[in-house]
Image 1 (cartoon, rainbow, N blue to C red):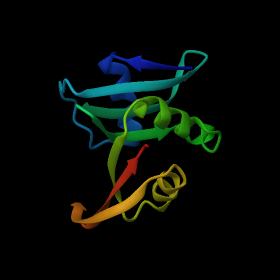
Image 2: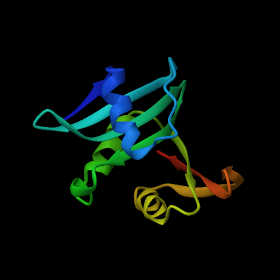
Image 3: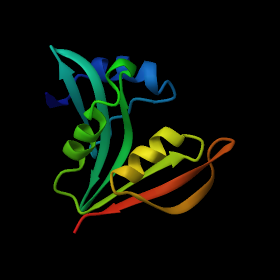
Length: 128
């Protein structure tokens, strides 16, 4: 089951595992949606909804629940209703790149040193 998460402690606890660099902010555009299995958070997506577009900030699923379609469900839920979807991903993250390509994103640009020593891809999905 997917639902919006407003409990900052739950969000930060999940991010400590997957995105330790994440710094909690009070961003009015950012929304968090979690995938729960028996009230246990096993996947999370963070998106920034900015007017007519949405940017995927973070998405993660617990290792033992991967490859079961949960990431796609989170991506679809978090971006539903938007025609312009964008994100950045490290050029070193081949698993994520494959996931995004499979879900209709295309590489639009390379952002040099976007992730410290690594470049990032700007990826976009246009929904018609």
